Amino acid sequence: MRSPLGRAIGLGSAKEGVEHWWIQRVTAIALVPLILWFVIAVIGLVGTDLETMQNWVGRPLPAILLVLLLIATFYHMSLGLQVVVEDYVHTELAKLALVIVIRLFCFAFTVAGIFAVLMIAVGSS
Amino acid sequence: MRSADRPLSPHLQIYRWQLTSVLSILHRAAGIALSAGTILLVWWLVAAASGPEAYDEVEDFLGSWLGLMLLFGWTVSLFYHLCNGIRHLVWDTGHALDLKSVYTGGWVVVGATGLLTFVAWVVGISRWVS
Image 1 (cartoon, chains in turn brown, purple):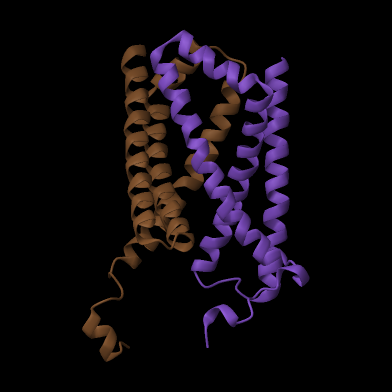
Image 2 (cartoon, rainbow over the protein chains, first blue to last red):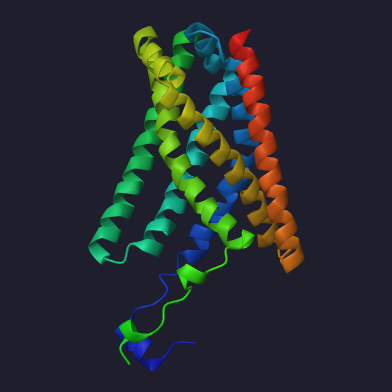
């Protein structure tokens, strides 16, 4: 289903759309239980002090789930924001710049979050 | 024909909003709001790793009116995006795509969002004051 002109110009699908769509769904499915767990855990921490919070993060299961939550959240977020930018930003340069900023922000914040969790976990063990 | 001469649709001044399109827009808006909220998540974790002073700053901010309002907004956004996301996942399997189911599911999502937000804040506040 491609016109001769389209074939000659070489524009069209980058053949990566399915992967984007699929990973957005996989991370969404992962986030359903992770977010519910996180909300319940955070409500449990309301009114407690730093030490309680550090002891909680330092336990293996919360630490592992927090790392998984950070990875799934920022992956899902970077895919979602990319679609928003691609839908509304029509200047090629601005679109490219924003997608790159989103990617870098998400990667940096994933690393920062995981590092913080590991630091607390190592410190409290 | 120049594209600028064509009538634009939808005609916003006589446009009747529908639940379907409003929920669709809100899903995106909630996603963008939650993206901003991830800054708080990472700030909270990094502060807890840094020590009492940094952690106090986060707690002071969250206890302020601005902090509480943002937190409430993020709670609503989170539960809405979660519930409506599940609705989207159901659609992805090819189910519930007829008009009646789309509207029923939409109202279920609105109700569930309200209920979950209410429960979360009631439990949270009762823990806060005790």
